[in-house]
Picture 1 (cartoon, each protein chain N blue to C red):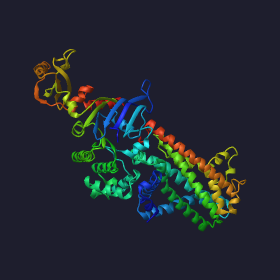
Picture 2: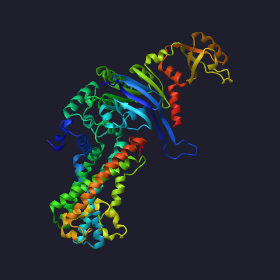
Picture 3: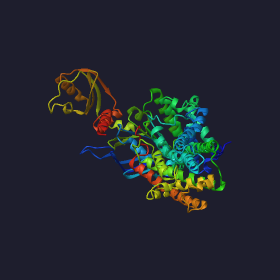
Picture 4: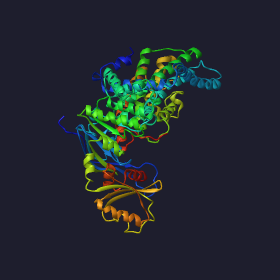
Length: 342
Length: 293
């Protein structure tokens, strides 16, 4: 196909009506996506990283034709998601994490066969592909088990087979490792990476709020928060953008009383950004300095605040640091804020 | 090899998305309806349920009329009630599938992103209940004929025509209710049951339409169910049905004509309503909404 873009959105906005009774002055709408421009190239494993409620699932639902944008345009595999719904559906599949869904009374084999039929696969092709994928996912022993008897991990593996058995051009994975144990999550990530290696012309859009997952898997990623795409690049480039600065993790004794204005840690010369969290009786500081030689000033400040250094670690920037830089808060804090806003 | 298996074995490239969705959904519906119990228990359920339901009516009738089951009105009531099982089964079967997929099995995302004709899918989901309903009707009618000696006078051609158009109109009504159900995020009761319960009063199921006040009778004229019940009674009971005619001015085939016309209109309406409902669900974000009822 000549179009090098597998996914393209232009100024996509999505506004939800807020349902249920409202008190006076409460908003009646919520902006889930606010002018999203996104370009994903064919063959990319692209990540959307953001806290819960940032707009990731809304964007995926629009791309998967489950939801209409309030304005803007979106194209998948060259087709408009609003006008060419059926063409888009023929080329995509979607797997969501944390799903307890499924016709529990069907066996794994029956359910996969049924969805393969819904996707238009010929009977024999469907059965062959299901058997092959069950072997890859380590599910061949449980094909006759009822879905209701499967653990969350096995159910997610079954969902993966459903999503990939149709050999889609574009796959949407919405938080695919949510709720999985470490081994199951590792299996799933391994499968995805292998599938991309085996199918270099296919495209995969992954949403996650796990930084390490995004870092490990994605060719490129975008950080989304409050419905806006804030940055978009390769994980390496995003982290490299912080390497003019020095990043430290400090574990210190609890800080004393809150200082008066003007004596904040952020105001110490050389401090670029700081994130403070109280953990198990001590305080952890994620500190970004414009230069390493600002550290003595920081330690002096801590002494003034009645604290003392317990441990100090200089580290390479992570996507978490990138997230803090572009949003001004940590991912879990952003998630709490989004939850409160809902 | 069963018909369903033969249909499944047609390569997908030769099968329209609508036929593929319909057949596979019919298979799924049958699994859901029949898989909850062992086959023997399921068979007892299918046989005992309709007979016990109709017996309640028979006992009430017998108490009031002092056991006059030989009267034509008994045949009218008994057959109307038996046939009405299909209204419940088909209309409810289709609309309930929307709620089941969205709320109970939580598969709406997978269903509505699949490249298939979801209108045909919904119709297919109703097939299992149609089959079970048809078996129930057959059992109930047979029981009535054997136990109460209801006299049969069957016009096969008329019966087949009435059945085809009747089931088609009920299916279309089921899709319309399914489309409305898609819009109701917090509906905790099955709309299909509500509507089929309401139609029970206005379609001549258990009493002739002219028992209703004249200003209420036109409500019954609006629904194909009324015409289907009347013409099916005529097809099965012959002269016995003529004692309580609902549309005395219409000949048997005249009624079939009206039923066919109304069915065609209802099918057109159901296609339009379903498309509009699907679009609105996507606009409002209702397709996969879960209310955890």
